[in-house]
Length: 143
Length: 143
DNA sequence: ATAGTCTTTGAGACTCATTCTCAATTATTA
DNA sequence: TAATAATTGAGAATGAGTCTCAAAGACTAT
Image 1 (cartoon, rainbow over the protein chains, first blue to last red):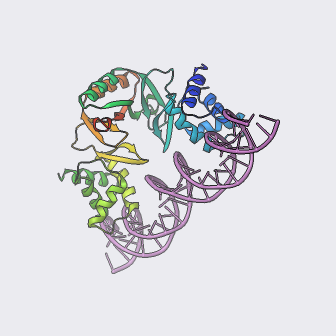
Image 2: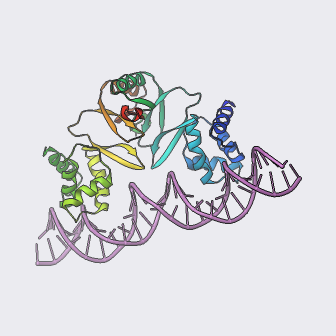
Image 3: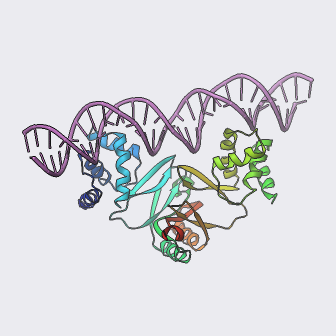
């Protein structure tokens, strides 16, 4: 906690950018929860406290957070991009329920080890893993 | 070859829908190649031979092909949904180059076995696997 | 401080993939 | 052949994400 600030600050400096008030608010809000989020959700959260941060700035700041390694685009759901923390989070994969939208996070490095092997064979440099499956969760099946 | 016709026909009947000319053209064009495709590419391919199939019908037919199990949405690239055959194709995963957009397909059931295990633990019914990674391919790295 | 320079911002216009509407057409059934 | 229901093409509508631009803010050198 609080470390994200340092990471983001360093990143911005390295790019000749500034840690402004809106960027700080966005960063803090993103790391106030541990959930996946999309821009609308983030916007609503921010707006509860700060009436002066625009959607445009959120859209502009997210790529900076991604590039700094703090978050990553994790999945697309209902035509919206979703993001999640990478900083301080273990690698995990997603089981996404297509009925209720619930996202089950499961820890597993096995799949990544396999992907790493395969990538090596193909001389491919992995930057980001995307492992998961879509289907129906227990709750939705029992109705 | 030709089997897709039967599968799609059966599916349509089961839903009280009809195998019309435009739907047949779309089906045939989708299965004329073995490549990933997006709507624009499909539209261009179709338009070479048939001037009378609209984008709207393509957009309407794709969900039918997905629902019938013949194709699936495989990835999103440059803000466009891409699709691939599932019928008659082995399961595979994707290594996507972020520089040149190249998609390397790698056969592997291992990751799916692992996912199946994990899903069982969480009482989750998998309908579709999504396994892959993004990064840089050999060619792009050597520049 | 002050001026000058460069970055950032909010607001709203814009883009573009995808979805929707609707009147006209086609397939199927009676 | 008429009636019914599904389907179509064309273009309008939607909506997430991007871009523009004038105003505001941050920083530097004086």
